[in-house]
Each structure stands twice: as C-alpha cells, then as structure tokens.
Amino acid sequence: MQKSTIQFLLINCFLAIVLISCGSVTKNYTPKKLDKTSYTVPYFTDSKTDYVYKTNISVYGNELSGIFIAKKINDTTHRIVFTTEFGNKLMDFEISETDFKINSIVSELDRKILINTLKEDFRLLLKKEYPIQEQFENSSNDIYKSADGKRDNYIFISKKDQKLEKIVHASKTKEKFTLLFNSENNIFAEKIQIIHQNIKLKIELNYFKSE
Image (cartoon, rainbow, N blue to C red; front, top):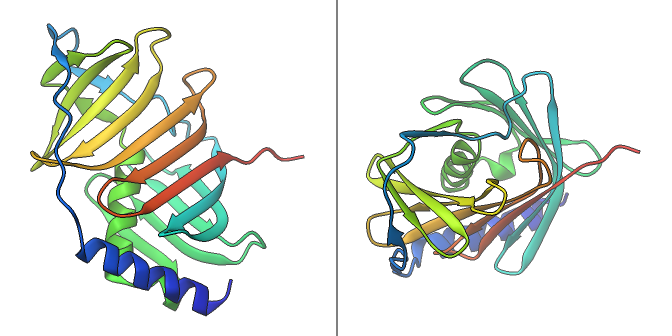
C-alpha cells in the first residue's frame, strides 16, 4: 500500500467528518409491546474461531482493500488485525465496550480522527449484549431500541426468519451509521457492511473462504 493513497484517504475522511450534515432518525415505526428486555448478538462469539474477511474501505469514491481478522480473546475483548492483501500488518488493536488498546499501527494510519471512527464502528460491531427499552415494528422487522449513552441503537430482526439484519446507531436527532448483516444461519455473518450516513465512508467485509 502506498503512503500517498493512505494519506489521501485520511484527508478526505477528515474533511467529511468536519462537514457533517444534519439528518433525522426515521420515525415511521409502529410501537409494539415489549417482548424482551435484552438481545444477544449471535456473531463474533466463538473464541475458537478466527473471523477472517476481505475488506474494502470506500471514502468519497477512493478505495482501500485488505484483510480484516477478528478473534475473541476473552469474555469481553476482541483482537482486531488489519493487513494488506499481501499480509503486511497495518493495525493491531484490542477492543471491548470499555477499553481500547493499540498494539501496533503504521504511522500513516496513526491519526486520532481515523482511530476514533474505527473504534466506534467496531465497538458496535462486536458488542454482544443490548439492553432493550422500547420495541417497534415495520412490515418486515421487529425493531428494538437500546440506549447507548447519549445515543441509541436500533436493532432490526427479520420477522420472517428471526435473523439480525441491521443495527442503526443514532443520536437523538439523526442516524450516524448502520451495520448491515447477511447471514445464512444467523450464527456467522458472511457479509457485513458499515455505512456512515453523515460522511461518505463505507466498510465492507466479505468472509474469506480459504481454498
């Protein structure tokens, strides 16, 4: 990976976050009687599994590809490693709901604004338990609201097969980013997308099938 490519992506990411536009959280859901008080995410839970994905990061039309590896190292913490497609390590960190530790990072990526964005994205992706305060529905999903400090998470469960399809992370007035899941068995997600609503940043993870 060339340094100039990483630096160009960082500049675009910084400008995008500075120039955030306002939006609003979708309110077109029907309130429903609460049928559970917590929800457990089925993905990234097996400590014996290395979760390996091909990764594509898009920032304002600029592409960055590599490999994403996640490993559950104890009950609360995952280790995340980003590498190039040739196996060169770009970033290695450990993350839980309360802690974040960088083991190594290349100098081109060692930027606070980028690290904070990835930390927020992957902390939500790897979150296991969601306390539920309210429930809604639309034509295809049961939707559970979980308070997360000053923000809220909306968990979309398919009415058809009870699979986790989407999590929306939002402030009180606008959506911030969305996690989309494609899973055949609701145990392992073959495809994951992290899409930011207020900046043109998209991270796509596709399960890496070894030959």
